[in-house]
Structure formats: C-alpha cells, structure tokens
Length: 525
Image 1: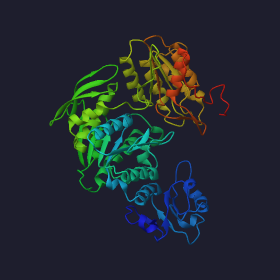
Image 2: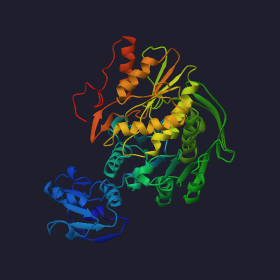
Image 3: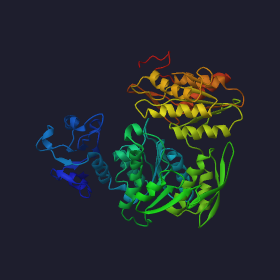
Image 4: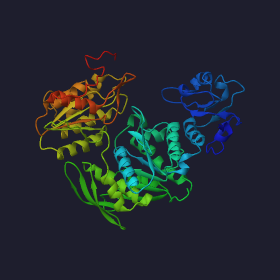
C-alpha cells in the first residue's frame, strides 16, 4: 500500500504547507462521497461547490489524509490528521492519482486526440489501425473504454473521465499487458487538469470550431485549453523504446498557425492544403464511403474509409498520419485497419427496419458538426432531408441560433426539440432556436416545427418521411440519458428511432423511452 510520502515523492507542483509521513493511503479521490476508510481526499474549489466544505464528511467516512488549497485552520481537521496545502488541488489530484497507480502512462505509448468535432471517430479509426499493426492498444473515449477484450461504459454524459478514473483505466491497461493507449481528451478535461500526468507521446487535433464558449468565455481561451495537449508533449520524459513526442496538426483548420507556434516538439501536418505534409488527393464519395489517395513525400496509399461524409477525409487522414509518423505503422497496414472499422456508435449510424427511407442518428451537437452532417445527408438521398435536434441548456446560447440557421439553410424540414434542457426553460430554448430559423426564412408549421418532447419529434419526423427521404436525429448520438432539471432520465435516440420505425411499419419494436415532456410520463419535471 502506498503512503502519503510515497504519493508526493515525484510530485511536480509546489507544496505550500503540511507534513508528509508514512500514513497508509488506500485510494485517492476528489469526491467526498467516494471516500472509503484510508482514502486521501483532495478538496477542490469549483464553480458549483467548494470541496473544502466537504472535508468533515470525508473525515466522517474514514479519510486518512486531506489535500486542499486553503490553510489548515480553515477547516475542522483533527490535529493528528495529515493535511497538505497545494496551489492547485485539481492538478494535484491528477498527479496523486497517477502516483497511486505507479504512473501507468510511463509504461504506455500515450496518444491524445482532441478537437471540437471528430474526436471519437478519429480515435476509433486510429484504434483499428493500431490493432491491424498488432499493437496491444487500449482506448478511452466518450463512448466507452476498451481494455483488451473488455469494453467498459464510461457513463451517461461523460467527456473525459475524472483524473482518478483515467489513471485507474490506464493502470488496468498496463496490468492487461497493453503497450499503447488512446485517450480522447476534451477542452473541459484539459481546463480541469483531468488529463495531466498522462505524459502523452503523440497529440492529434481534429479541428477547433465554435463550442463551449459558455465555459471558456472566448474562442481564444477554448483554443488554449485544447493546446495544453500539445504544449504538454515537451514535458513527456523518455520512455523505453519510444520515439520523441510528435504533434499531428490539421493544416486546413484555423487553429493550425496557433498550434504550430505553441508546440515545441516535432510536428507534422495533414489536410487538403497544398502545404500539408500528408495530403488527401482525388477524393471521391458515395452514400456509404469515401475514397482518396493519401500522399506524403515518403509514400502514397489508396484509402477507403467505410464511413460517409467528406469530413471523414480529415478524420481518417489525421488517424493515418498519426499511425504512420507517430507509431511507425506501414501505410498499407493502416489503410487496411481503417477499412475494417465497423462504424462508430452514434456517428451517422443507420437505423434500418426495412423502411423505404433512410433513418440516421448522429452526435452532431455543434454548428459545424450539424452543417457537415446535413451536407453529408444531402449526398445520401435525392429526397427530402428531415432534421431533428435541440440545443442544451446551461451551455453556449449562441449555438441555438447558429444551429437553427444551419438547418434552415440545409434541411428541407427542421424539427426543434429537447436536448438536455437542464434547469433552463425548454420553451425559451426552443424560442431562441425558432428565431434563428426565422432569420433564415424558415416558416413555422411549414419548414420548421417546435415539438418539445424528443420522442414525439422523432415520431413526427418518421411519420412525415416519404419514400426516398432521409430522417436524421442529431445531438445525442450514443448518449444514454437526457437531463431535465438536475435529473438524468434514461434516453437513447437509437431506441426512439427504432420505436418510431416499428410503429410506422407495424412490426415488433422497442417501447419509446419517455421523458418528462411526454404527457404519459409519471415522473416530475
């Protein structure tokens, strides 16, 4: 068992006060509700709550030691209990969790993938390329964690898991004999230091577009949070058999110049841009896949990506560049791994019960992602595109207008509905979205509709679809819940779509999941 002194032996951050002794530590946690006897509780300050206020609860649950940012006298801590004061408790939590698990990232080749859109898809593409090359690879994404033959659910609304969970997953990968790990990283994860102590060897960016400005305050702050993946590469120590760190940058994205400037390690770029190091040429696409020739000064390979959408040229090229230049995988092997990709849950996922139109569920929840999803939908049908989506409460309000404008421009019919309203008024959210649709010439009751209940919105879209049309439900993708008030209610767009299709076709199917907006729902808002 680790001691408090052991956990701080390689601590890279300043210590303001406190004594380090041989107190045994059974776990490292940042949530007082997770404290078990012998745990080290790290009290963190946050926008919603101050962890220091929960120190008494942590002690009552059996905490053996406390780490916090405030002076010891600010909390009722028994004099015999160790208390260590640090400058940044969130960052400390990541390093202490890593130390508790013997720094698992130092025994793995670590790949970080970040960006606004395409992170999960790019991570899955790279995962299959690495497996095709025989690399024993694990992955932590917003969909799940894959460790050997085991697939673990990472939660309802999880982006990057918290630092103790990340380090525990990595430790399990090491114990399973894996040698490589892919970690999908979000701006929240970087801003909240959840991915510190992961000691990345390879960083990959997809793009940086409009998102999370409610949290970060500005595009520049959002971009800076993403950039921490690339600035952190310079701090990664040498690993046995490992190559020097590498940054894989998108030459087509507006973030390129900034990231190229702040990154202090090897860089390589990809894209359609003539100056990209790895380029996609001769791009062709149909309703099911894209094809192109990937070319660098060193090699060329024909690529077939089994996913629709021109944006997947960028995602697959990012993965291919990382595989070849970051991991030494043969280009032909990487292309073969991509072709074996079975699809990504909730990403342009077709739902087919034999209907005479196309039904798709996609995670698109940003203006850019919705735009490219609808552009792709256009290539998949000669009929109408019917789009169903909402915009989350307590998040970037500007997105509401922007997404409605995008759909008014690109879809034939837009149905605005609920998408995690949280404690905001759903009616107010829908009005903001409706205003955006009207600004683009949308006519309510003709080209766009407001249907608060998401199940009813999907049902209506399916009912109005004619042969050859395409219905696409965006915004939830793989997610398994929806938040009303402060409660997460079970929800899956794919189940709702199957239920609506079965109802229309008169065949057996799942029941509609029900939300508080449904008149038959027995719960409370």
